[in-house]
Image (cartoon, rainbow, N blue to C red):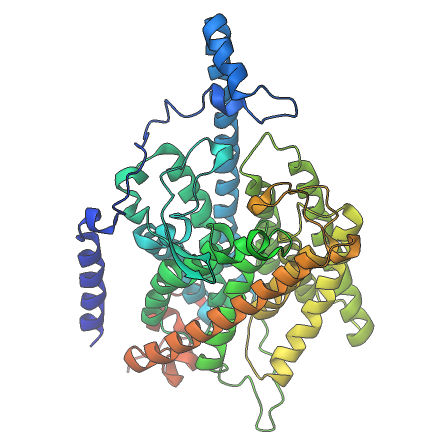
Length: 527
């Protein structure tokens, strides 16, 4: 049975690779790709860099009268794009390193007998997720984005599948970029792929924490392909890829449409809601709840490991948030980075005070998750708020985290070993609300095609909050329904839950054939 399932998965994967790439491409003419990047960034990319930049007519006159100066302008334009590309790639590398942070945090917060299994999921969600995103996830998300101005290209990503309602076009998913082939074989598009892929991978790894210690590895593999190929890309398209949520401002004057600067909803809420659906379908760990329904504590085995993981995540978050400018020349990156730091500090501090006040001790695991909660909450509004708002957002997020953890565990009766639903789901939604509340109007001009800076309710503009609420509801309804149905159906085909005796003994040997701590394993003696 196991060999049959693995053979089927391998056959499906190879069949997908063998699909004619031309059949997946849009028939509309597309620009010629530039795999080397040699022609990317010209004098035209100097236009609009600063206030008072020369117009296109100025550049044409310059080329006719001062050809040497025109060539110099080409060099300036190319270097500007190069700086932005290097910045974007380095930030992408930082976000990739966050995977190590997730692996350490989740493994430390769970029990020693399952450490190898938890690490294995965090390891392979990276590889599997990347392949799924390469096959079709990137195309569905970014295939209709229409170009990335700060990187001087990606105009080939201009084919969006839309539906027309009331005379307005609503983008649903992109249709260019499958397998990064054809016109997608382009230096800029490849750079965009890397940056977007590591964001997707953050989403994909979040449910591995909630579903740890009782999830079969084979069903995890199918999940990793599904969320990276379909669920994450579709919602990400609606917000970041030119889809319908980003158009609410242009179509209905709801602020700038749904605004999520670095992914409070696109990345974190999506992962948190998927974790909620998976936790409900999978059920709690054996021994988590007593007969009367009250929870038992199942402590993590290595809190120092978990804390180290959280610090790695905080470090990578600078790439997550500041990198989302996609422009090293955008000096707002300093504000974004400081807001990110302050929110994380406020989140950990408020979580510490909450636990100290109500439970008598400053629970360090809650403090660590409070740090992450502050980071999640500031991720959407980080570019649009001042430092005072950043601290307030982080402080509220830390308290929300603590209250939510106990609500999920005691009221909803959902077993979440690492608190991922609360850290990412609850505070992802809160972060989206903060854009509509705390944005001060100093940044975001022309975002989603709307003039003026992003402005929230506390600064006199209420329509942005409405767009944010629509995005939050859309995320929860879409992700929860799809992922709940997916886990239910998958459970009928490949059981989600390990055998009870394997769960009691530990999953390392039974699921991944390696024990993280072999010296702790009791060996059977043969007589």
